[in-house]
Image (cartoon, rainbow, N blue to C red; front, top):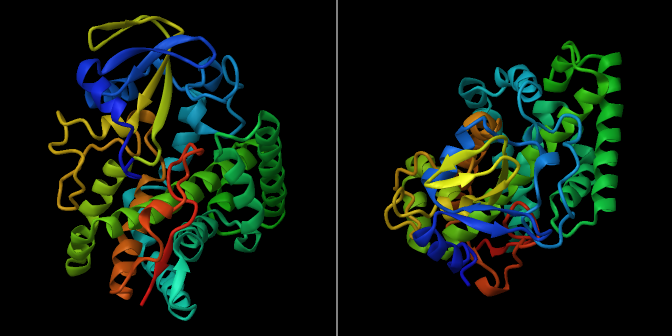
Length: 382
C-alpha cells in the first residue's frame, strides 16, 4: 500500500478494540495497543517496565522467549534507578536552550552538504548525500567521535537496527560498538576533550558505562533523524502541495516537523511489560504480560488528530508520540527537531526543481528495520 500509511488492519482494530489481545510469535499471550489515549497512558505509567529481559518480542523472526537484558548504557531498556541515573547525567546537556545554540552549526553543516550536492550532478541519493551525513556530523561533533570512522560505526548501528539480523550478528555488533567506544573513552581519559564524552569522563561512570552510553547516544543520533530527513522528504515530494507550502513559508518548519513525526512515525513500535495487574481502557493487563504499542496507529487516531491520514504541515500536531512520552521520551528530541527544522526548509529552498528520479513505487523501503524509512531516495535536483 501507501509507503506512509500503517497497515489498514491497525485502523480497524483501533476502532473496535484500541487495547486488544495479541498472541506473540513465541506463543506469549500479551496485548496490542493501537489507540492514542491508552498508548500515552502506558508510556506515562511507571508500572509498565521498559526492561528488555521481561519482554516478549512482538515481530516474527525475532528472538524466542524474553529478550536478553539491555547492554550497558542502553537507557531504552532500563527502569529506575539505573535509567534515572543516566538521564540526570545527560538531561542538562540536551536542553532546549543548548540544542538551539547548536542551530548555527547545523545550518553550516546543512549548507555544506547542499553545496556538495549542487556540484555533484543533476541527481543524487538523498540518503547518502544529505540525510545520513547531517545528523552524523552533528552527533559526532557533540559526542567527540571522529567522523572519519563513520563507515565503521554506521555499519554496526545498521546491524543493530535490523530486525532480520541474527542474534549472533547483533551480539557481534554490540561488542564491536562497545570496543570502538571503549578505545575512544580511554583516549579521552588520557587526554580530555571539550565534548560530551570528554565531559562525562569526569563523572562517576565506569569505562564500560561511558562506552555503552556513548554507543547508545551515537546510534540514536545517527539512525532516527537520518530516516526522518529521508522519509520526510519522500513524503513531501509525494505531497507537492505540502512541499510548496514549506518552500513558500519556511516559518512552517516547526509545525511541519511535528506533523511529519506524527504522520510517518518511523519509530513505529514500542514494548512495555506490566509489573503488576493494571486496568487499561477496560482491560486488565496481568503482571508479566507484554504490551506492544503501535505508535503509527496511535498517531493516526482520529479521536486525537482529526483527518489523521492527511499530511498537513499546518496542523498543530502537539502531543504526537513519535518521540515517545513519559520518562523514556527521546532524550535527543530537541536535537532532532533542530536538525529537521533547519535541513528540510534549506533543502527544498536550495533545489526548487527537487523531485523523485524514480517512480515512488521503486523507492526501496526499510521494512525490515525497527526504524522505518527508505534505503535509498534517488532525486533529481535540476
